[in-house]
Length: 460
Ligand SMILES: NC(=O)c1ccc[n+]([C@@H]2O[C@H](COP(=O)([O-])OP(=O)(O)OC[C@H]3O[C@@H](n4cnc5c(N)ncnc54)[C@H](O)[C@@H]3O)[C@@H](O)[C@H]2O)c1
Image (cartoon, rainbow, N blue to C red; front, side, top):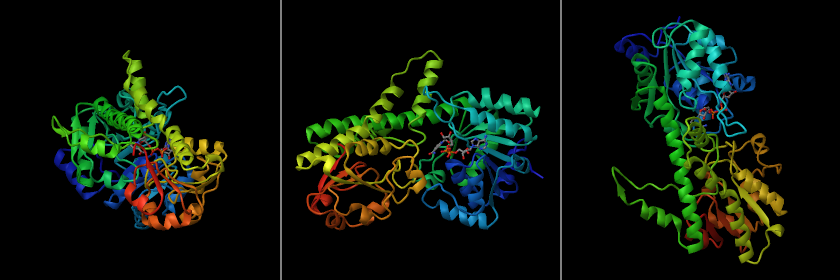
Protein backbone atom coordinates (compact mmCIF):
# COMPACT_ATOMS: atom_id res chain seq x y z
CA UNK A 1 0.00 0.00 0.00
CA UNK A 2 1.18 3.52 -0.69
CA UNK A 3 2.61 5.41 2.25
CA UNK A 4 1.20 8.70 0.95
CA UNK A 5 3.42 11.54 -0.09
CA UNK A 6 1.06 14.37 0.74
CA UNK A 7 -0.54 15.42 4.00
CA UNK A 8 2.20 14.35 6.36
CA UNK A 9 4.19 16.56 8.68
CA UNK A 10 7.50 17.89 7.34
CA UNK A 11 9.43 15.39 9.46
CA UNK A 12 7.35 12.47 8.18
CA UNK A 13 7.72 13.54 4.56
CA UNK A 14 11.41 13.87 5.17
CA UNK A 15 11.57 10.35 6.54
CA UNK A 16 9.44 8.97 3.74
CA UNK A 17 11.72 10.49 1.11
CA UNK A 18 14.97 9.60 2.85
CA UNK A 19 13.78 6.03 3.42
CA UNK A 20 12.47 5.75 -0.17
CA UNK A 21 9.61 3.78 1.28
CA UNK A 22 7.17 4.60 -1.46
CA UNK A 23 7.29 4.54 -5.23
CA UNK A 24 7.34 6.99 -8.10
CA UNK A 25 5.16 6.71 -11.21
CA UNK A 26 6.28 8.71 -14.22
CA UNK A 27 3.56 9.31 -16.81
CA UNK A 28 5.16 9.88 -20.22
CA UNK A 29 8.35 7.88 -20.60
CA UNK A 30 9.98 9.69 -23.53
CA UNK A 31 13.24 11.64 -23.37
CA UNK A 32 12.64 13.46 -20.10
CA UNK A 33 10.67 10.67 -18.42
CA UNK A 34 13.40 8.12 -19.15
CA UNK A 35 16.23 10.34 -17.89
CA UNK A 36 14.37 11.27 -14.70
CA UNK A 37 13.14 7.71 -14.15
CA UNK A 38 16.59 6.17 -14.57
CA UNK A 39 18.23 8.71 -12.25
CA UNK A 40 15.56 8.37 -9.53
CA UNK A 41 15.79 4.56 -9.75
CA UNK A 42 19.56 4.79 -9.49
CA UNK A 43 19.08 6.80 -6.31
CA UNK A 44 17.15 3.89 -4.87
CA UNK A 45 13.51 4.65 -5.71
CA UNK A 46 11.18 2.03 -7.15
CA UNK A 47 10.18 3.73 -10.43
CA UNK A 48 7.41 2.78 -12.85
CA UNK A 49 7.33 4.49 -16.22
CA UNK A 50 3.90 4.65 -17.83
CA UNK A 51 3.63 5.38 -21.53
CA UNK A 52 1.07 4.88 -24.29
CA UNK A 53 3.77 3.62 -26.69
CA UNK A 54 4.11 -0.15 -26.30
CA UNK A 55 7.53 -0.36 -27.99
CA UNK A 56 9.03 2.16 -25.53
CA UNK A 57 7.69 0.12 -22.62
CA UNK A 58 9.04 -3.13 -24.11
CA UNK A 59 12.46 -1.59 -24.65
CA UNK A 60 12.71 -0.37 -21.06
CA UNK A 61 11.66 -3.74 -19.68
CA UNK A 62 14.45 -5.31 -21.77
CA UNK A 63 16.84 -2.89 -20.07
CA UNK A 64 17.42 -0.69 -23.11
CA UNK A 65 16.43 2.79 -24.23
CA UNK A 66 16.48 4.56 -27.58
CA UNK A 67 17.13 7.88 -25.83
CA UNK A 68 20.76 8.66 -26.71
CA UNK A 69 22.23 10.50 -23.74
CA UNK A 70 25.68 10.08 -22.15
CA UNK A 71 25.52 7.53 -19.30
CA UNK A 72 21.82 6.69 -19.77
CA UNK A 73 22.15 3.21 -21.34
CA UNK A 74 24.04 2.00 -18.31
CA UNK A 75 21.63 3.54 -15.78
CA UNK A 76 18.61 2.01 -17.53
CA UNK A 77 20.26 -1.39 -17.88
CA UNK A 78 21.51 -1.56 -14.27
CA UNK A 79 18.29 -0.36 -12.66
CA UNK A 80 16.01 -2.63 -14.71
CA UNK A 81 18.30 -5.53 -13.77
CA UNK A 82 18.15 -4.48 -10.12
CA UNK A 83 14.33 -4.46 -10.27
CA UNK A 84 14.03 -0.77 -9.42
CA UNK A 85 12.93 0.40 -12.87
CA UNK A 86 10.12 -0.97 -14.99
CA UNK A 87 7.64 0.34 -17.54
CA UNK A 88 4.03 -0.39 -18.42
CA UNK A 89 1.14 0.84 -20.55
CA UNK A 90 -1.22 0.10 -17.66
CA UNK A 91 -2.18 3.28 -15.84
CA UNK A 92 -3.41 1.24 -12.87
CA UNK A 93 0.26 1.18 -11.81
CA UNK A 94 -0.32 4.75 -10.59
CA UNK A 95 -2.16 3.48 -7.53
CA UNK A 96 0.88 1.69 -6.10
CA UNK A 97 2.96 4.85 -6.06
CA UNK A 98 2.78 7.98 -3.92
CA UNK A 99 4.62 10.38 -6.17
CA UNK A 100 3.19 10.86 -9.65
CA UNK A 101 5.27 12.84 -12.12
CA UNK A 102 3.84 13.89 -15.48
CA UNK A 103 6.33 14.31 -18.34
CA UNK A 104 4.23 13.96 -21.50
CA UNK A 105 4.95 16.08 -24.57
CA UNK A 106 3.61 19.56 -25.29
CA UNK A 107 4.23 20.18 -28.99
CA UNK A 108 3.60 23.23 -31.12
CA UNK A 109 0.51 23.32 -33.34
CA UNK A 110 0.39 24.45 -36.98
CA UNK A 111 -0.42 28.03 -35.93
CA UNK A 112 2.52 28.07 -33.45
CA UNK A 113 0.12 27.45 -30.56
CA UNK A 114 0.85 25.07 -27.65
CA UNK A 115 -0.89 21.70 -27.89
CA UNK A 116 -1.73 20.42 -24.42
CA UNK A 117 -3.92 17.45 -25.42
CA UNK A 118 -1.46 14.90 -23.98
CA UNK A 119 -1.41 16.79 -20.67
CA UNK A 120 -5.22 16.64 -20.50
CA UNK A 121 -5.26 12.94 -21.46
CA UNK A 122 -2.59 12.11 -18.85
CA UNK A 123 -4.49 14.11 -16.20
CA UNK A 124 -7.66 12.13 -16.93
CA UNK A 125 -5.80 8.82 -16.48
CA UNK A 126 -4.20 10.06 -13.25
CA UNK A 127 -7.55 11.45 -12.02
CA UNK A 128 -9.21 8.03 -12.40
CA UNK A 129 -6.64 6.47 -10.06
CA UNK A 130 -5.99 9.39 -7.73
CA UNK A 131 -6.09 8.68 -4.01
CA UNK A 132 -5.86 10.86 -0.95
CA UNK A 133 -2.19 11.37 -0.12
CA UNK A 134 -0.88 11.32 -3.69
CA UNK A 135 1.45 14.11 -4.79
CA UNK A 136 1.08 14.97 -8.48
CA UNK A 137 3.94 16.94 -10.03
CA UNK A 138 3.71 18.30 -13.55
CA UNK A 139 7.10 18.64 -15.27
CA UNK A 140 6.15 19.14 -18.91
CA UNK A 141 6.66 22.66 -20.26
CA UNK A 142 3.20 24.25 -20.40
CA UNK A 143 1.53 27.61 -21.02
CA UNK A 144 1.36 29.48 -17.68
CA UNK A 145 -1.88 28.70 -15.89
CA UNK A 146 -2.08 25.07 -17.11
CA UNK A 147 -1.49 23.39 -13.72
CA UNK A 148 -4.38 25.19 -12.09
CA UNK A 149 -6.77 25.81 -14.98
CA UNK A 150 -6.30 22.57 -16.94
CA UNK A 151 -4.80 19.83 -14.77
CA UNK A 152 -6.34 20.65 -11.38
CA UNK A 153 -9.99 20.78 -12.57
CA UNK A 154 -9.59 17.47 -14.44
CA UNK A 155 -8.01 15.75 -11.42
CA UNK A 156 -10.61 17.12 -9.01
CA UNK A 157 -13.63 16.44 -11.16
CA UNK A 158 -12.70 12.85 -11.99
CA UNK A 159 -11.41 11.86 -8.54
CA UNK A 160 -13.84 13.83 -6.39
CA UNK A 161 -10.80 14.85 -4.32
CA UNK A 162 -9.53 18.35 -3.68
CA UNK A 163 -6.04 19.63 -4.53
CA UNK A 164 -4.17 20.96 -1.52
CA UNK A 165 -6.63 19.26 0.82
CA UNK A 166 -6.72 15.59 -0.19
CA UNK A 167 -3.84 15.39 -2.63
CA UNK A 168 -0.81 17.52 -3.43
CA UNK A 169 -0.28 19.31 -6.74
CA UNK A 170 2.81 21.14 -7.95
CA UNK A 171 4.52 22.37 -11.09
CA UNK A 172 8.25 21.74 -11.17
CA UNK A 173 9.74 22.53 -14.59
CA UNK A 174 12.37 20.27 -16.08
CA UNK A 175 15.44 22.38 -16.75
CA UNK A 176 17.99 19.86 -18.02
CA UNK A 177 19.65 20.23 -21.41
CA UNK A 178 20.05 17.29 -23.77
CA UNK A 179 23.58 15.99 -24.12
CA UNK A 180 24.28 16.67 -20.45
CA UNK A 181 20.94 15.58 -19.05
CA UNK A 182 22.11 13.40 -16.16
CA UNK A 183 24.70 15.92 -15.00
CA UNK A 184 22.15 18.74 -15.20
CA UNK A 185 19.52 16.79 -13.31
CA UNK A 186 21.96 16.25 -10.46
CA UNK A 187 23.14 19.84 -10.27
CA UNK A 188 20.58 22.43 -11.42
CA UNK A 189 18.29 23.84 -8.68
CA UNK A 190 14.67 22.75 -8.94
CA UNK A 191 11.94 25.36 -9.09
CA UNK A 192 8.70 24.43 -7.33
CA UNK A 193 5.38 26.23 -7.57
CA UNK A 194 2.49 24.46 -5.86
CA UNK A 195 -1.18 25.01 -5.15
CA UNK A 196 -0.40 25.47 -1.44
CA UNK A 197 2.45 25.11 1.02
CA UNK A 198 2.29 21.42 1.91
CA UNK A 199 2.41 20.39 -1.76
CA UNK A 200 5.39 22.70 -2.27
CA UNK A 201 7.24 21.23 0.71
CA UNK A 202 6.57 17.60 -0.25
CA UNK A 203 7.69 18.28 -3.83
CA UNK A 204 10.85 20.16 -2.92
CA UNK A 205 11.74 17.54 -0.26
CA UNK A 206 11.57 14.80 -2.89
CA UNK A 207 13.95 16.55 -5.29
CA UNK A 208 16.28 18.02 -2.67
CA UNK A 209 16.88 14.79 -0.81
CA UNK A 210 16.94 12.50 -3.82
CA UNK A 211 19.11 14.56 -6.14
CA UNK A 212 20.94 16.71 -3.60
CA UNK A 213 19.98 19.91 -5.45
CA UNK A 214 18.71 23.21 -4.10
CA UNK A 215 15.04 24.02 -4.43
CA UNK A 216 13.56 27.41 -5.19
CA UNK A 217 9.96 27.56 -4.00
CA UNK A 218 7.89 30.24 -5.70
CA UNK A 219 4.40 31.59 -4.96
CA UNK A 220 2.32 29.39 -7.23
CA UNK A 221 2.43 27.02 -10.24
CA UNK A 222 1.90 29.93 -12.67
CA UNK A 223 5.14 31.55 -11.55
CA UNK A 224 7.08 28.29 -11.97
CA UNK A 225 5.51 27.75 -15.41
CA UNK A 226 6.61 31.25 -16.41
CA UNK A 227 10.16 30.68 -15.09
CA UNK A 228 10.62 27.75 -17.46
CA UNK A 229 9.55 29.85 -20.44
CA UNK A 230 11.67 32.82 -19.33
CA UNK A 231 14.78 30.60 -19.25
CA UNK A 232 14.25 29.24 -22.74
CA UNK A 233 13.31 32.61 -24.20
CA UNK A 234 16.54 34.05 -22.76
CA UNK A 235 18.61 31.22 -24.27
CA UNK A 236 17.01 31.48 -27.71
CA UNK A 237 17.32 35.27 -27.78
CA UNK A 238 20.90 35.18 -26.54
CA UNK A 239 21.87 32.69 -29.27
CA UNK A 240 20.12 34.94 -31.81
CA UNK A 241 22.30 37.81 -30.59
CA UNK A 242 25.42 35.65 -30.99
CA UNK A 243 24.28 34.60 -34.47
CA UNK A 244 23.78 38.18 -35.63
CA UNK A 245 27.17 39.17 -34.19
CA UNK A 246 28.67 36.21 -36.10
CA UNK A 247 27.16 37.40 -39.39
CA UNK A 248 28.71 40.84 -38.87
CA UNK A 249 32.06 39.37 -37.81
CA UNK A 250 32.11 37.23 -40.96
CA UNK A 251 32.01 40.43 -43.02
CA UNK A 252 34.52 42.22 -40.80
CA UNK A 253 36.92 39.29 -40.84
CA UNK A 254 36.95 39.33 -37.05
CA UNK A 255 36.75 36.21 -34.87
CA UNK A 256 33.33 36.32 -33.16
CA UNK A 257 34.56 34.07 -30.35
CA UNK A 258 37.20 36.66 -29.43
CA UNK A 259 34.49 39.32 -29.50
CA UNK A 260 32.22 37.27 -27.27
CA UNK A 261 34.99 36.24 -24.87
CA UNK A 262 36.03 39.87 -24.54
CA UNK A 263 32.48 41.17 -24.21
CA UNK A 264 31.74 38.57 -21.52
CA UNK A 265 34.39 40.00 -19.20
CA UNK A 266 32.17 43.03 -18.50
CA UNK A 267 30.52 42.88 -15.06
CA UNK A 268 26.88 43.96 -15.11
CA UNK A 269 24.92 44.11 -11.86
CA UNK A 270 25.61 40.73 -10.17
CA UNK A 271 26.93 38.86 -13.20
CA UNK A 272 29.07 39.36 -16.26
CA UNK A 273 27.63 39.89 -19.71
CA UNK A 274 27.04 36.35 -20.95
CA UNK A 275 26.66 36.09 -24.71
CA UNK A 276 26.26 32.46 -25.82
CA UNK A 277 27.76 30.76 -28.89
CA UNK A 278 26.71 31.25 -32.51
CA UNK A 279 26.07 28.11 -34.54
CA UNK A 280 24.56 26.71 -37.71
CA UNK A 281 21.14 26.71 -36.07
CA UNK A 282 18.96 26.09 -33.06
CA UNK A 283 16.83 22.96 -32.90
CA UNK A 284 15.37 20.34 -30.63
CA UNK A 285 12.16 20.03 -28.76
CA UNK A 286 12.39 23.08 -26.46
CA UNK A 287 14.03 26.18 -27.90
CA UNK A 288 12.11 25.87 -31.16
CA UNK A 289 8.75 25.96 -29.40
CA UNK A 290 9.00 27.59 -25.97
CA UNK A 291 9.52 31.13 -27.35
CA UNK A 292 6.34 30.58 -29.39
CA UNK A 293 4.54 29.61 -26.16
CA UNK A 294 5.53 33.06 -24.84
CA UNK A 295 4.41 34.74 -28.05
CA UNK A 296 1.07 32.95 -27.85
CA UNK A 297 0.73 33.83 -24.18
CA UNK A 298 1.36 37.53 -24.86
CA UNK A 299 -1.21 37.45 -27.63
CA UNK A 300 -3.81 35.81 -25.38
CA UNK A 301 -3.20 38.51 -22.76
CA UNK A 302 -3.42 41.35 -25.29
CA UNK A 303 0.33 42.06 -25.09
CA UNK A 304 2.08 42.05 -28.47
CA UNK A 305 5.63 40.80 -27.95
CA UNK A 306 8.51 41.36 -30.39
CA UNK A 307 11.25 39.24 -28.81
CA UNK A 308 10.02 35.65 -29.26
CA UNK A 309 9.36 36.16 -32.98
CA UNK A 310 12.67 37.93 -33.45
CA UNK A 311 14.76 35.25 -31.76
CA UNK A 312 13.00 32.46 -33.62
CA UNK A 313 13.29 34.25 -36.97
CA UNK A 314 17.00 35.03 -36.54
CA UNK A 315 17.88 31.51 -35.45
CA UNK A 316 15.86 29.97 -38.28
CA UNK A 317 18.04 31.83 -40.82
CA UNK A 318 21.20 30.00 -39.75
CA UNK A 319 20.97 26.70 -41.71
CA UNK A 320 20.66 28.61 -45.01
CA UNK A 321 23.36 31.05 -43.91
CA UNK A 322 25.70 28.12 -43.21
CA UNK A 323 24.87 26.51 -46.54
CA UNK A 324 25.71 29.78 -48.33
CA UNK A 325 29.01 30.01 -46.39
CA UNK A 326 29.98 26.57 -47.67
CA UNK A 327 29.06 27.41 -51.24
CA UNK A 328 31.13 30.60 -51.14
CA UNK A 329 34.07 28.93 -49.47
CA UNK A 330 34.24 26.21 -52.12
CA UNK A 331 33.96 28.83 -54.88
CA UNK A 332 36.80 30.86 -53.35
CA UNK A 333 38.94 27.75 -53.62
CA UNK A 334 38.03 27.00 -57.20
CA UNK A 335 35.36 24.38 -56.62
CA UNK A 336 31.66 24.32 -57.42
CA UNK A 337 29.34 22.89 -54.79
CA UNK A 338 27.36 20.86 -57.31
CA UNK A 339 30.43 18.89 -58.41
CA UNK A 340 31.94 18.55 -54.93
CA UNK A 341 31.90 15.62 -52.54
CA UNK A 342 30.55 16.88 -49.23
CA UNK A 343 30.74 14.92 -45.97
CA UNK A 344 28.16 16.06 -43.42
CA UNK A 345 29.33 15.10 -39.94
CA UNK A 346 26.55 15.21 -37.36
CA UNK A 347 22.83 15.64 -37.99
CA UNK A 348 21.49 15.58 -34.41
CA UNK A 349 20.25 18.95 -33.22
CA UNK A 350 22.99 19.18 -30.62
CA UNK A 351 26.42 17.86 -29.70
CA UNK A 352 26.51 14.44 -28.00
CA UNK A 353 22.85 13.54 -28.47
CA UNK A 354 21.08 11.42 -31.06
CA UNK A 355 17.94 13.57 -31.00
CA UNK A 356 16.94 14.78 -34.46
CA UNK A 357 13.63 16.34 -33.44
CA UNK A 358 13.36 19.70 -35.18
CA UNK A 359 17.05 19.65 -35.97
CA UNK A 360 18.30 22.66 -37.95
CA UNK A 361 20.59 20.30 -39.87
CA UNK A 362 17.53 19.02 -41.76
CA UNK A 363 17.16 22.33 -43.64
CA UNK A 364 20.87 22.56 -44.42
CA UNK A 365 20.96 18.92 -45.59
CA UNK A 366 17.91 19.54 -47.78
CA UNK A 367 19.70 22.47 -49.43
CA UNK A 368 22.77 20.29 -49.99
CA UNK A 369 20.61 17.53 -51.49
CA UNK A 370 18.99 20.04 -53.84
CA UNK A 371 22.40 21.42 -54.88
CA UNK A 372 23.25 18.15 -56.62
CA UNK A 373 26.55 17.71 -54.73
CA UNK A 374 27.75 14.22 -53.86
CA UNK A 375 26.61 13.94 -50.27
CA UNK A 376 27.62 11.52 -47.52
CA UNK A 377 26.22 11.74 -44.00
CA UNK A 378 27.65 10.34 -40.79
CA UNK A 379 26.45 10.64 -37.19
CA UNK A 380 27.59 8.13 -34.56
CA UNK A 381 24.81 9.14 -32.15
CA UNK A 382 21.84 8.85 -34.50
CA UNK A 383 19.97 5.63 -35.28
CA UNK A 384 19.14 4.80 -38.92
CA UNK A 385 15.45 5.22 -38.11
CA UNK A 386 15.96 8.71 -36.63
CA UNK A 387 18.25 9.67 -39.54
CA UNK A 388 15.44 8.95 -42.00
CA UNK A 389 13.52 11.88 -40.46
CA UNK A 390 16.33 14.17 -41.66
CA UNK A 391 17.55 12.74 -44.97
CA UNK A 392 16.85 9.96 -47.41
CA UNK A 393 20.62 9.37 -47.73
CA UNK A 394 21.57 6.33 -45.61
CA UNK A 395 24.09 7.08 -42.88
CA UNK A 396 27.71 6.12 -43.57
CA UNK A 397 28.69 4.00 -40.62
CA UNK A 398 32.26 5.09 -39.94
CA UNK A 399 33.82 8.51 -40.10
CA UNK A 400 36.81 7.40 -42.17
CA UNK A 401 34.65 6.19 -45.08
CA UNK A 402 32.54 9.35 -44.84
CA UNK A 403 35.54 11.67 -45.00
CA UNK A 404 37.46 9.79 -47.74
CA UNK A 405 38.12 12.00 -50.80
CA UNK A 406 35.79 14.75 -49.57
CA UNK A 407 36.11 18.30 -50.93
CA UNK A 408 34.36 19.60 -47.84
CA UNK A 409 33.95 18.38 -44.29
CA UNK A 410 30.85 20.00 -42.82
CA UNK A 411 30.55 19.64 -39.06
CA UNK A 412 26.94 20.31 -38.17
CA UNK A 413 27.60 19.01 -34.66
CA UNK A 414 30.70 18.91 -32.48
CA UNK A 415 30.15 15.37 -31.15
CA UNK A 416 32.97 14.19 -28.90
CA UNK A 417 33.84 11.36 -31.36
CA UNK A 418 34.71 13.94 -34.01
CA UNK A 419 37.42 15.36 -31.78
CA UNK A 420 38.91 11.96 -31.04
CA UNK A 421 40.13 11.40 -34.58
CA UNK A 422 43.35 13.37 -35.25
CA UNK A 423 42.85 16.32 -37.61
CA UNK A 424 45.86 15.21 -39.59
CA UNK A 425 44.13 11.87 -40.24
CA UNK A 426 41.00 13.67 -41.50
CA UNK A 427 43.17 15.79 -43.81
CA UNK A 428 44.96 12.70 -45.15
CA UNK A 429 41.69 10.91 -45.85
CA UNK A 430 40.05 13.91 -47.50
CA UNK A 431 43.04 14.88 -49.60
CA UNK A 432 44.59 18.25 -50.46
CA UNK A 433 42.60 21.51 -50.41
CA UNK A 434 39.77 20.18 -48.26
CA UNK A 435 37.38 22.77 -46.86
CA UNK A 436 36.52 22.40 -43.16
CA UNK A 437 33.25 24.09 -42.16
CA UNK A 438 32.88 24.14 -38.38
CA UNK A 439 29.13 24.69 -37.89
CA UNK A 440 29.37 24.65 -34.09
CA UNK A 441 32.68 26.47 -33.67
CA UNK A 442 34.01 23.38 -31.90
CA UNK A 443 37.53 23.28 -33.33
CA UNK A 444 40.62 25.43 -33.04
CA UNK A 445 41.08 27.16 -36.43
CA UNK A 446 44.89 27.19 -36.07
CA UNK A 447 44.99 23.42 -35.47
CA UNK A 448 42.74 22.71 -38.46
CA UNK A 449 44.91 24.93 -40.68
CA UNK A 450 48.08 23.31 -39.34
CA UNK A 451 46.66 19.95 -40.44
CA UNK A 452 46.40 21.36 -43.97
CA UNK A 453 42.67 22.10 -44.27
CA UNK A 454 40.84 25.36 -45.07
CA UNK A 455 39.01 26.40 -41.91
CA UNK A 456 35.78 28.37 -41.63
CA UNK A 457 33.54 28.68 -38.58
CA UNK A 458 30.33 30.62 -37.96
CA UNK A 459 31.63 34.16 -37.51
CA UNK A 460 35.29 33.14 -37.53
N1 LIG B 1 13.66 17.18 -24.28
C1 LIG B 1 14.13 18.13 -23.51
O1 LIG B 1 15.34 18.48 -23.53
C2 LIG B 1 13.24 18.84 -22.51
C3 LIG B 1 13.85 19.64 -21.52
C4 LIG B 1 13.03 20.27 -20.59
C5 LIG B 1 11.65 20.13 -20.67
N2 LIG B 1 11.10 19.37 -21.66
C6 LIG B 1 9.64 19.26 -21.69
O2 LIG B 1 9.29 17.98 -21.16
C7 LIG B 1 8.14 17.45 -21.83
C8 LIG B 1 8.48 16.08 -22.40
O3 LIG B 1 9.51 16.23 -23.36
P1 LIG B 1 10.20 14.96 -24.03
O4 LIG B 1 11.36 15.48 -24.80
O5 LIG B 1 10.44 13.92 -23.01
O6 LIG B 1 9.03 14.47 -25.01
P2 LIG B 1 8.87 13.01 -25.63
O7 LIG B 1 7.98 13.17 -26.81
O8 LIG B 1 10.21 12.39 -25.82
O9 LIG B 1 8.11 12.18 -24.50
C9 LIG B 1 6.76 12.30 -24.21
C10 LIG B 1 6.22 10.90 -23.95
O10 LIG B 1 4.89 10.99 -23.46
C11 LIG B 1 4.15 9.90 -23.99
N3 LIG B 1 2.73 10.19 -23.90
C12 LIG B 1 1.96 11.00 -24.68
N4 LIG B 1 0.70 11.03 -24.21
C13 LIG B 1 0.66 10.25 -23.11
C14 LIG B 1 -0.34 9.91 -22.18
N5 LIG B 1 -1.57 10.39 -22.28
N6 LIG B 1 -0.03 9.08 -21.18
C15 LIG B 1 1.23 8.57 -21.05
N7 LIG B 1 2.23 8.87 -21.89
C16 LIG B 1 1.95 9.70 -22.91
C17 LIG B 1 4.68 9.76 -25.40
O11 LIG B 1 4.40 8.48 -25.93
C18 LIG B 1 6.17 10.01 -25.20
O12 LIG B 1 6.88 8.82 -24.96
C19 LIG B 1 7.76 18.50 -22.87
O13 LIG B 1 6.78 19.35 -22.35
C20 LIG B 1 9.05 19.28 -23.09
O14 LIG B 1 8.81 20.59 -23.54
C21 LIG B 1 11.85 18.71 -22.56
